[in-house]
Amino acid sequence: QIQLVESGGGLVQAGGSLRLSCVVSGTNFNVLTLSWYRQAPGKRREFVGYIFSDGETDYEGTVKGRFTISRDNAKNTVYLQMTTLKPEDTAVYYCNSVVLGSNYWGQGTQVTVSS
Image 1 (cartoon, rainbow, N blue to C red):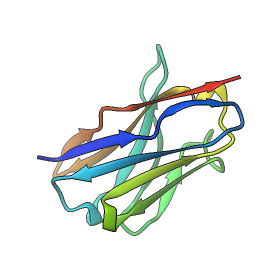
Image 2 (image 1 turned 120 degrees about the vertical axis):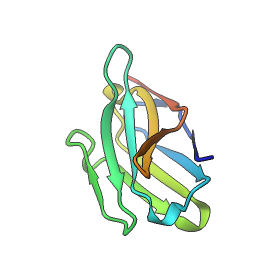
Image 3 (image 1 turned 30 degrees about the horizontal axis):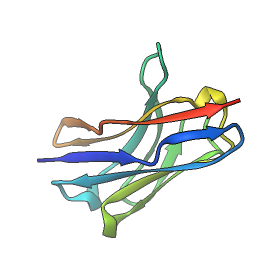
Image 4 (image 1 turned 180 degrees about the vertical axis):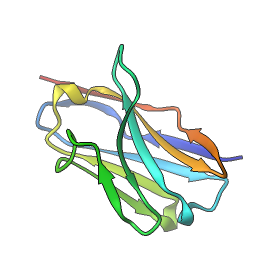
C-alpha cells in the first residue's frame, strides 16, 4: 500500500521559514517524480513544484526563488523548504506522486503565515 505522510507545518510570521517533509512508503521511492501542492481556504488546490528522480526541479512562479524541493532517497523523503514566507502562502500543503497511473496524496499539513 502506497502512503505519503506530510509533516512540518505550523504557524510562522511573515518573512520566516519552514521545512515540510513527506515520507513515502510502499513503492520504489528512487524512481518517483514527487510534487507539492497547496490549497488555501476557499480556493482550488494549486501546484507548487516538483522534483524528478534525477533531482531536477521546477516551481510555480510565485514561489520560485523562495521555495526549494529536495529529496533524500535513503530516507524515502521529499522536502519543501520554504523561506521568506508571506501571508498568501497560508494553505494546507500536500505531497503527491503518480504511480502506475494512479494519483497518491498525503493527508496534508497546515501552514499558517501571520502578518
